[in-house]
Each structure stands twice: as structure tokens, then as C-alpha cells.
Image 1 (cartoon, rainbow, N blue to C red):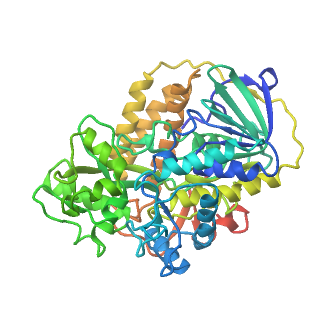
Image 2 (cartoon, helix red, strand yellow):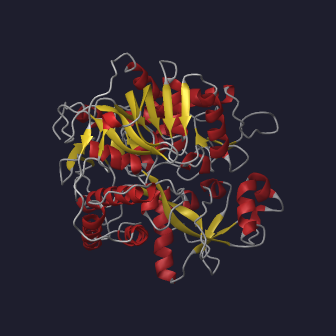
Image 3 (cartoon, rainbow, N blue to C red):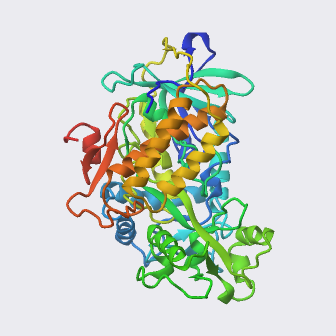
Length: 558
């Protein structure tokens, strides 16, 4: 893969300069929560490449998992999370998430977030796949993410120390070392592009990467169009360590209507008692897992794919016809509206569903405070990897992850607020390419289709090898080019992240959690390890489970 340090040529001293104590890239739950916390220590700029609410957070339906019921416990939530993670979770990260969760929910309530309540006034707690207790708080049934985004944005914009830069594309992290060498490298901010103001340099004492995942790598995805892996690609080019990118979670149930985008149908629907059936009306989940429809997402997704292959049908169905009049509409008003826009009535119709790419489990390798291998770079939320989710994320732990680790990242950024900040000369020289050109629309469409077919729910070494050959071809004629708009930069980022994902999937010769290798169908009991990558290495290195934080500090061999 071509290793180009920056996407565009520039000379930093010739561009407009903006200064801040903390730069936050991303306006989802993790980014906004980090910004709110960092604003206690100094000035903050939040940069988002589209409108602030176009994020996976705002699209989230199900809710936020937390230990709030008297009959629930921290140990039970920890147990469920570890079980879903298929022996690859970092237990310290899990306990941090679960232990701090109730305080983060109480904080949201104090800030004015609405949650659904029982008739007596207590919080309404739902249940989703992999949870053995009802512990999911939600808003308007299926609009939790939208209300969470509204609440955090309202708190953020009320702070005098926080400025929001909408529709401002972050191209690259600025570093002291142009070659990405880890020994002397430090992140100094980012180079950004605004359609009105053009290129600009934002210098920051701390840079918080909270740019979300890379669901747009796949033809079938629940993610918004902005989820093109920009943050992962930026961090990779800058020399940051990344980990676990072979693990991509596929949501089992997205609306499957020909020619339409894949609309998410929340896990909470099955938590309320919906059945998964085939065209013959048979509930097929029982042989796959004791929890049936409420099995972890990786199990349900593979079961659906397997059943579709056996039945030779294009999809399976969610059946809510037994709910009774008005129950579905009352619990899931947003989903009801979506279904009715396709002339589907959950009280009388079967709902066609199929899995789709949903959540990027790997990311920039960080400790529990978001500190990466690059000084000055902090990461949190979906773009980061603390080892929290292991090989598969437990439903509704993601919004809680953004709240818990976003806050911790904001504190870590604040600790850097006292260090000196000043512009330095950074020069990016890129030679004009002599190679031919490929159509970017074709490249983007082809790579998404190739990822879905070859690095999707089921994988083989032969298909991954072919995929890497395809990426190598596209990269030769795309990564060497200089583009001047987000479409080109996104295509380059997708190619970069897609290559890393495919290499990681090729290297892990076992099946575990969301990573299913048909040629290696069993987990390797003696090698429960993380795969960590650096920008200077072509092959991954093994990190023992339980040693991620130590390895990040260089205290154990990698």
C-alpha cells in the first residue's frame, strides 16, 4: 500500500492559523462529551465534516446500557459484556465502563435529557441481545440517539469555551515528524478544509479524535454517509498504532427492501419479543444459541446468513404480529413511521430483514484515558480501541462507551492544556502522479461491494487475498493522486482503512466473535490475542489479552 504522509501538498506557514487548547474531531457522543469536559480546562474547537447531528450517535435507536435496576449488578453487566466479547475483552476497560455508567446516566438527566418512564415515574428499562437483565434506558422508544445528541449539543454550545465548526473536513493530523517515526513524533493539531474559507491549520495542545467508524466500507451498512473511516486513516498516516480492525460488527436486522437504503431495526424490537422467522413461518434461531433471537449480534447475523444460504431466499423476516393492537407503534414510533413509508404495517405484515455492517470494533489503540501511542493524540468512541468490546460489542454499550471514555478523554486533553503551543513549519511535498486515473465513483462503489463479498460476515483466506489484490490495484491509481474535495479524500481514506481491515482479517486464522473464517472455523484457544498494527509495519504483532495498556507504554514485548 502506498504510504503517503499527507493527502495534499501544503506549507503550514502560508495557510490561515487558528489556535485552541483542545481540538475535537467529531460531534457524536464521544466528541461532544470530550469537548464538554475539556472546556473546563481551556478553549475547545469541535470540527465536524458535515452538519453536527449527522452522526451514528444521532441515528442510534436502541438505548444506553447501564446498571440502574435494584435487581441488576455491576458484576452481571460485566459478565454479559465479557461473554459477548468472546474472550478478547480487556476486563479493566469493561469494569471502567460498567462502573462509571450510572453516574453518566445521572449526569444526562441533570442536563435535561429525556428518558422513557414507567407509569410510576421510574426509568423504563428494556432488554436487548446478550443482556440477561433489563438495563437499557431509551427515549421515545427508538429515538435515544437523537435525544442524546440534542442534549449534549445543547450543553456544549452553552459553554463560552467551545466553538463548533460545521462542514469542516479534517484532512490530516499535523505532526512534528514528517515520516511518522514514533520516537520523536507529536500531534500538533490538524489541517482542515472549509467550503467557504478553504484550507486552514488548527493548532492544538491536545487533539481528540472522535470521528466514528468506517461502516461505509461495506455495500450494506446502517451507518450515515459520513462514516468513511477518516479518523482511522488520519491516525494511521500520522504513525499511530491501531488494533483489532478485523473485528467489524454486523447488525442482524436492517430493513431489506430492494433499491432502498438499509434502515436499522433496533435490537430492542427483539428484546420486546419479536420473532425471527423464514418464509415458511419457522423460527430458526433455537439451534444456533440458547437465547434464540436474543443471542449476541454476531451469532444472530451468522445464523441469518446461514439460514438464507440453506433456504436460497434473499432475506428472513421479523414477526411482530403477535404484539397486539397499538403496542409496536407505542413502543417504537420512529420505526413505525419508517415501516409505513414502505407500506409495511408491523401489526399485519412480516418485515423483511438482512444483516448489514454496523460498528467498527477496532481502532486507534488507546489506554483507558484515550491516550494513543502518539503524544498529543487522544482518541475515544468508535474510532478508538481500548479492548472494551473484544471480538463483539454487547448491544447498547456503544453510547455508554462514548459517555464514559469521552469524559475521560476530555480530562486527558485538559491535562495537556498547560503545555506551550506555537506554530511550526510543516511542509508537505507531493509529486504529481504519472499514473493513469480511475473514476472515483466507480472505485468507491467497487471497493464497498468487494468488502461486502470478501470481508463481510463470512471470510476465507483466498477471498481476502483476492480483496487485497483489488485494493492494491485501486490504490496504485488513487492513493498517488492529489484531490481537492472531500469525495477524493474520502475515497483515499476508504482505500487505506479497507486495506488495513483486510490485512488484519487475513492474519487472524481463527473464528472469534464477529470474525468468521470459513477456512478456520474454530477459535484458537491458546492464542487469545489482539493484533496491533503500526504505520511502519506490513504485518501485525500479537498482544496478549490483559496487556494492552502495558504494551502501549512499551512495558511488555509486542
